[in-house]
Length: 506
Image (cartoon, rainbow, N blue to C red; front, top):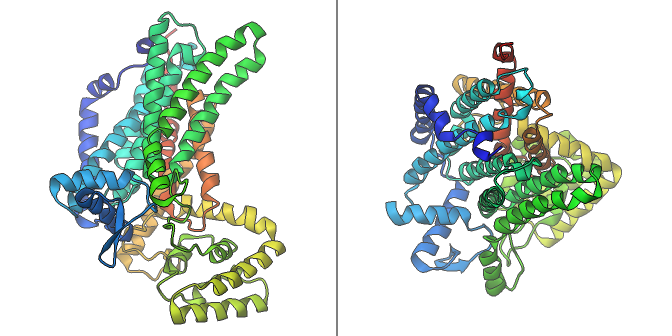
């Protein structure tokens, strides 16, 4: 069976469903343009990226402007500044409106890729077993996924934000789609091939493209490396399980596609980081292939004690806005700390003293940072499970389940029900919509857990969620890279009840 026989082309899918895709695509475009023109988000990070892009474009220096001077930086990876520089070179410096409109096009491309990934996942041989018409189910799943992606308010909202999320989601979906294509080629799927070297060559090209897409994710955000880890881990399990069960004479046959696929992905995912790594070695005498953990430059101190203390109590995005982001530079309100930030009255008094001292200078001195570190050590020693298990789980839950209104004027303390009626309604509606996507996605993953491609998506979702639990700043946007997985699984669940109509005639 050749690759063309195993999967249908995306163009054919769009052609067969042209009216549905046209109407849904126009609705998706209108939703995104609404956010672009009504709620454009150009935040502090956007301006920092823009400043790097301008200096890179006009002065040839990858750096930030500090006191009128351009200072080289390694605090941000070059993916998004390169994207901004390309747009600024055509439409003018700081033309963020053009940036957002082009991001809308990328986001619409993401919707198409999600539909393609869904139809490929469910165009699987298990539906050939005289039970379901796989073409009908695959087609319907693709349409459902396209609709859920196109009308998703959270993807649309971030298309109107000058941040890395829209491009990161696009390249994540592209890499996953290419991985499924690679697995569908017989030599890589473990089946017999009649294409010989032609089929092997096609597989290599697909995995190279998958690696480059993964590399684009890493150049945009350091946590893009989680996608690479998920793909490599999944490839290992795909090929290792049959090797362990098979006879010795077939092991070399199975190892060859594993080594070829994994090497192609890894090399081409990491290759784009080489110029950045060499540049950092030359400019800063540091081996820094990504960006620093706290996005700091080489001469900026890291408040390790304060960060560690924060992780002993923080569990929700509201505290990020009210406490974490304000340090250093702005006042922090002691009354905004939750009760779980103290175990003993002595800790409460020490924390209050530290907050009062900080609010006088708006800076965390090394001495203050050491006192925060001592508080953190006490609390971790008293309750290690809370620090290593329960709070990370709560942070992950908050990132997944919170109403995704952080780019809108809604009050983050929505549960107090004292916001303006319009924005309180928006928070409640967004919360319900997010719950629908997440719950439907979970049950969809469970329902189709036997499909190899679904397992790849699950591995990615699991690895990313575990990683996010280690962060001090539980921001809901960090789970958006997983939303294509959620949407595809939700689309499959919606199609689950229609499968009885897809039975093949006797």
